[in-house]
Image (cartoon, rainbow, N blue to C red; front, side, top):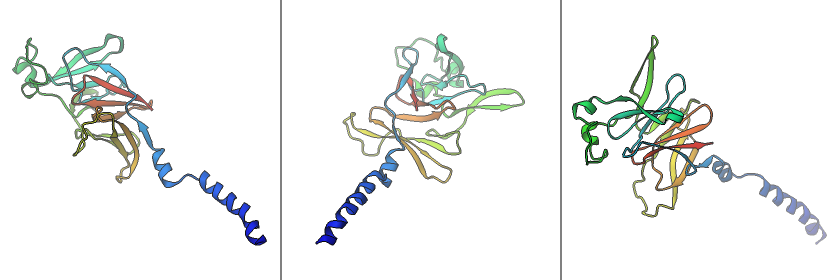
Length: 210
């Protein structure tokens, strides 16, 4: 009996140590962050779908392609300005006033997607770049955005995975979670730690400070 009683303090100490040691599950949870707390760069009235987000070689921007065929540049206090447009924009007179929404005219006006800046001999041009939902994270890995789930619950308040960061071997390093009404099409991380979210459906570019 004395031997059993003498072991109780040792057992209690051992259990306390186990509770303090982080488990594999808690370590994995530490790589998850909230993608719903965003700042917004609202697009001009009537425009939606800043699906693709890019920055130029000087770090200015963002530049986004929107549903009516324009590529817009964000100029800080001056807001959004037109930087470029798709060939269909002028051909199909997409700059003319129309009662039809820009979303409905997307098939004729063309939405620029997969934008990136290509520099060669000091000439800068904007061109199609990456797959729609995959962007380099600047650290040797990639951000992969998940726009929708295969079987999606109608309850928008439920949280789900918005995007994951993976390394070059495909190992998951980080998860971004948020409500189901947040549907990123692209995740762009900058050197200052800010993450920009492109979207097919929204009327703004989301910004997350990590």
